Length: 76
Image (cartoon, rainbow, N blue to C red; front, side, top):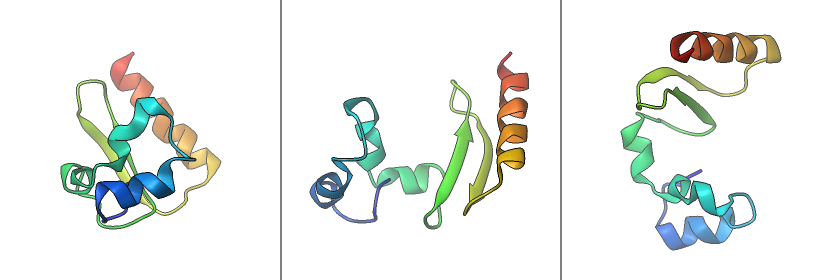
């Protein structure tokens, strides 16, 4: 969600999209933390911050389900 801008500018735009429990998504340092090059980007991580997968752009339902199945197999 972070927009490569200052926190206040990102917060003004994201206020309608994010609930209080995901305000961390406004912090631009998240780009570097997960090696995000641009948007849209998705990062799948485990509860202990292990990066499972990163992809850019849209993917189909079948691919997304396969990614979630794989994530569940790691944590199950």
